[in-house]
Every structure is written in C-alpha cells, then in structure tokens.
Length: 325
Ligand code: PEP
Ligand code: MG
Image 1 (cartoon, rainbow, N blue to C red):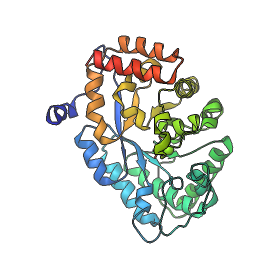
Image 2: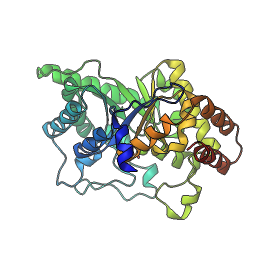
Image 3: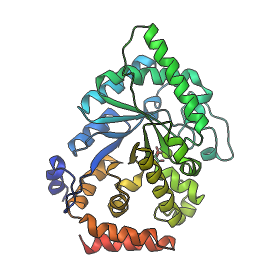
C-alpha cells in the first residue's frame, strides 16, 4: 500500500473535477524535510524551529540558525519555506532556559509572548531568518498571536533587525513576507484587523481546537472532548478564511486537521488550497484528493456547516470518505 502511494509523490494533487491543491509539509528538522520531499511536498508550510533549540546546552547562535534555515531553503528548491519563530512554553521546554512554574502553561508564558519579552532572543532569530531569505522563498510566521499590538511590536523588531543588517552590510529579502498563526480564538474574532497588518494567515488547528473548546490537547482524560469538527471550531475556521479572502492575503492550514483526509470537503468548500501537514500524511491526503469530486465534497461540507452537534460532522465526513473510497 505504502509503495503504491509512493508512486503518487510526483503527481499533482488535483481533484477529479480539476481543483488543484498545494500540499506542503510541517517539519522540525532537515532530516524531516528529506522525507517530506520524498513524499512530494511542494514546500514547507511550517518549520517548527523550537527543535533547533532543543537537545543542547545553550541558545543557538545567529550563525548556527542561519546555516539551518539556509539549508532548508535551498533543499526546498523554489518551494515556499514558512519559518515559525520560537514556540516554546506550553508543553515544550528547554533545559537551559528555565520557565516559571505555571498553573496553566498553555495560557501562560509561551511563544510570541516569550519572544516579545526576550527581544534579544527574538532579534537573533529574525536576523538568521532574514539572512537566509536570500537563499529561497522564505516567509516568517509568528505563533500564538492574540492582538494587533503583538503584531506591530514584532514588526517593529523586524524593522530594527533589518537596519542592523544594513549597518553590517548583510543582504536579505527586504520584502520578506510576514504571517501569523491563527490559533487563539481572539485572533479569529479580530481576523479582519490582523489581516491589514500581515501577508498571510495559517490556521493552527491543534491549538485552536484546544482553546475554542477549553480542552487541553495533552489531557487524556478529556481527549474524547477534543472535537476538531465541533460546529464552534468550523465557524472559527470559516471566519478566518473569510477575513483573509476579503483582505486579499494568503490563507493556509498547518494544524493536524489538514492531514486528516476527512477534512478535505471543508477546505474545498471554503476555497482553501494551501494545506500543510506532517510528511507521513502527504500521500494519503493526495490520494484522497485525486479520488474526490470537489462538487460532491462541497455538498457534504455545506451540511457540516449547518450541523448542530459536535459528533454529527465527524460522522458525516467519515461516511463520505468510506462511501467514495
Ligand atoms: C497548531 O497549533 O495547530 C500548530 C500547527 O502548532 P503546534 O502544533 O506546533 O502548536
Ligand atoms: Mg500551535
């Protein structure tokens, strides 16, 4: 089965009725990129950079980071490489950077909140990303954004780092696209305001589901309540896509939901063609795309958008998958 799927790696992801999708990979390392490319990823929709900071004794230097980002950009060829700035805190920790004991780490000192508090770390990472940006189609993405101020503050730091590179006589892409993860409900509710400040949104369903439903994504005891197809989640996704489309900025999905082949009707109905997922999901989702008629899938998605119960949509989507397999 796997071997049969691998034959699809060079085939374009197009539905039976001609809707083309761009399938990219979520990666944490250069090694994972190799796997993604083998499975036909068209780019990197999410590079989780925290793994560069793990398994070592101190923060990676600007040069160390630059080498890795450059390597990823070059390997990806002409494909997009979305580099997400450090997303530690929550469940991810560094041995050499003790974080405070927190009552609710997922609601605490995490991601962009750390970057804006520790601008020294943030500047180093942005400088490395900017320097690498001349080697490929690099974009930068900010995690856990919940306000317009955070975006403005981050962009101000980016502008400072650019000036510093100018002084150092180092070249970079002055037009480096800046995007944000939409993974906090507040960001969804102000998506129209955020859209005027950035070049793209990428929906992070892993955290979005946890925050919308108030269901800890790590808690086994309530795992049965973690419903990615809950009507509240679907409405949030739709609001985000609509805000991006009316502002004319890019929209993609990089949470695990994109790698769930059952979710395809949702993206087809909303007109989202840019999906990023773990390398292991690429061929499965591509196979599903090739075997799906967008017109039929949209019909099913429309029923989901008017569904009332959290379990109903999942059942509908599973049934559609089984029926047309
Ligand atoms: C997400 O939250 O959906 C996401 C892609 O980021 P992470 O899983 O790294 O938190
Ligand atoms: Mg996240």
